Image (tube, rainbow, N blue to C red):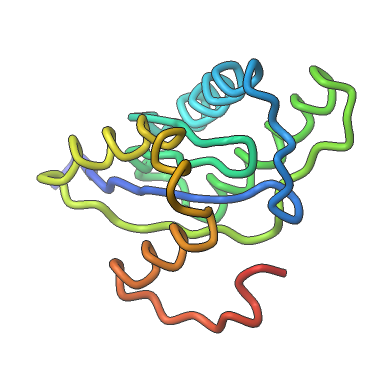
Length: 148
């Protein structure tokens, strides 16, 4: 086959340093747009980016030439520098992330989930949400190391 084709949908989640609410509400749309542009510049296809003051959800189609780890590292590094420049604060992301594969049939569901983060987090903490995602996607984890 002379052509390489792929469709790998990824739902990535990562939090601010120490899960502190570092992103003020007026910056959220700009940060999400910036993260989407980083994804696109890397050859991924951003589908939906959203989140709250202390974490981000990035839903994207992974480039066939990038790894998930490299994509998220570049998103976090670039956006951290951008946030420091834009807000002049000591912004940073926590090390680590969650990344989950999504079936094409679930695309609309995940888009809505990412879009509704603000209302979703009126009733559930980020930590409980992340534990739910880990359980739903059958990821084994050790609670001692998830939050450091």
